[in-house]
Length: 346
Image 1 (cartoon, helix red, strand yellow):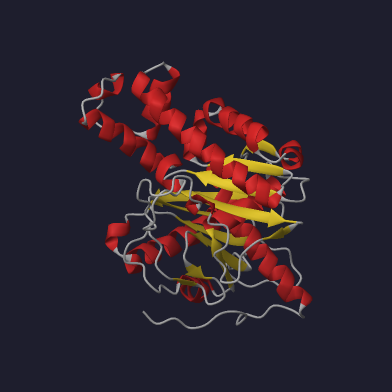
Image 2 (cartoon, rainbow, N blue to C red; image 1 turned 90 degrees about the horizontal axis):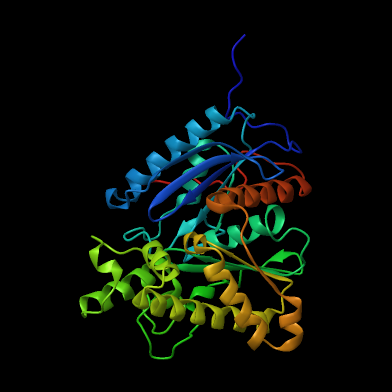
């Protein structure tokens, strides 16, 4: 007896798993996600974006094939894709993500559909992170939840009254580009004073390096290169320069979260991303600032908590939007191989 084809499409209505692709600027993460939010067959590799999008996408799809084989949980029925924007979700195109230079008008969705013979769903990575934490992580049981990822950049997503907020053009939730310092540091988006220009890991490290280059005394001067993790560790040890950089970071991140709490009045704000590995050093001052400065009813309602899903958040979220696609298709009368699939020529 021959083994079943892991890419053969099951009947409509089947809760079959979804292949999840998370495309980051530094790493690619691929897994197979079942309807309960569990991930299987995880494969992670460096993006090596300098190779160009054609080479990277071929490698991404090969990772997808390996993940399906490793997972061993049955054939996949869809592929969900998480990537930073801007993007055009319905057509499956990446427009010009800043973290992927040269990836302009890349038809990643149609390419994935072509590669795996199943329909695709594409969403901004922070939006799928919000969906994942809402359904399977820290936000379980909430009604309105905000999610901020504080990492290389600062991204965000919202679930409002149980529904993900995507915005009119599908790129809503750019919480990293709230202005917290008018005329301040230049952000990667081109504007000045965005919270990303102060709270991201990139900015934390850069501000420390600038101060060191200007002659500031610090224990970090002995390091070959300074990272955000180095700054948080030095701040915890009482290094004056690191304490100053860290204080500015949590103050301006807290200001942005306070504004969001006032606007959305959520049940919960979930903070994730690599910078939050600092733990209470980051969460506690942000939580305190929200409690002190947000409008009283909103401050009482909103809990500020760390994310639960860690590095798997966008894989789980990409799987979730794939399952949503299948549910919508099955309600509409069944899934066919051609649903949202178009041939892509590159």
